[in-house]
Length: 478
Picture 1 (cartoon, rainbow, N blue to C red):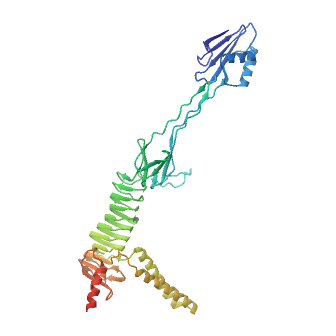
Picture 2 (cartoon, one colour):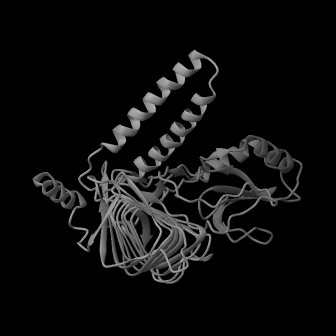
Picture 3 (cartoon, rainbow, N blue to C red):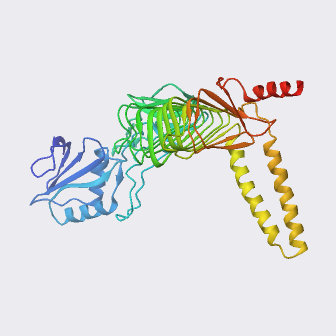
């Protein structure tokens, strides 16, 4: 006899199933709610014969069970039943569960520019200044891949029915500015330089990074492909590298500052270790004790003090002095004061590319050494080798000095006072200032009588070469 019922006392749970009753036993076959398990329960009686394996197979077929039978379990169940042992909720067959699909996801193909690394060594030094993990990109860089969702795979119940999977969901991501989607939206490519940002379900490339306060341990050193604006100070020992430009509202300490574009700041006290490398122009209120290298103009409102400055543009200090240090400017130098009342040593080199000036200094040192070695040479062969080397050095020196650069303006403008102990290197002329000169004045090269000319002040827009041509024409008329 067979009847539909539910598992009784001793069952794992109340599971609907089919009960088969014979004189000697009762067999209950239940199928789990998810149709992934077939459970058998056996109750023997005192009278009548026990169930055989063939009987069990027939009951399972009658109940519609077609799943993956566990033959070992079935055999044990049948043996125990024949021995008159009661059994509860024995899993004799299982289905194949469906495998749900995977949601779409984003995988980055670019790496952070500054990574905080840990190799597991607790004793290793950790640089607490490096906490930023910007993902910097340039135009054309592949940012990430969008992997589409997978459909999953179907399963089967113990009764042979197909169980459909739950498909994955597409990635909910909006493509923002400066990013293009290629290959049917599966490949994200940057269309501008900047950092990758993901916010509110949108991915974009931002070209500007704003720090609302100081650059400190909370913010960390910055490496950014774009424009950086700092609305506070940059504290000692932090660095900022911004490819397109940098604006600092406050002051900068002993730091390394670099930008491919313009740099503007309130002031910087580099304490003899700080540096600025600028691919554009620099504007500041003051700069103290720094190494500065610049491709454009350097315009300082108050003071340049004790710096080493090299620029392919002009150096202009509007209200104060250039005092102490060394300053090389291809386009000329202008300040209210040069040097100081304390006669601090100040060197100004104008009208030359600082790359050439550095090479000239090295060549001149080699030439001086060559002259010394020639006087000490002991053989004719040594003398001849030194002579040939001296000729090559001289040729290279003349080649550099004869260079013509349209940006060059060998001119120093002083609106107030030119103090003593200042060294002016103007074109090919060097002059040590031994007594103060009152301005306003312009110092240019005297190519007729050698030395320098001290003339009435003219703008740096007026080229020293044009002034000298007028003197040469006047000299020729005489």
